[in-house]
Length: 165
Image (tube, rainbow, N blue to C red):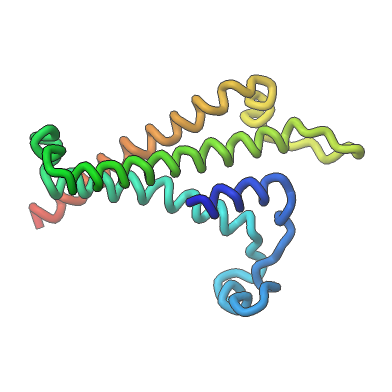
């Protein structure tokens, strides 16, 4: 997660945004099989989307597997379960931090004025967040909350389908 945080910051600040993954030594041919035009930006967007959806699904799946929702205090009475809950909380917090860092670096990229005028971006949401930068954290938290609710609905629906089938 820390590597993803650092690489998200580096990519959105333009340090590695034009690097084609096919040009990398060693693992480059593997990325060429997937997509010849894949850049670091594409890879980071895929990883962010995967982790921001997969982590809540895994957490809800564990909650429903171990029936934590029925007796949370009883489950937390075991020291090992407290460790599990702490690790899950840290991983979930790092996913939220990754979303916040990604959004804020995109906002910073939008507001950064270079020496030369660049092409105008047609993203009104980013323009709005660039003018009201404090809302960025709330937007990132809202995205995390929506992902968490969708993960719960997905896990419950898949469990119902498995039980009926």
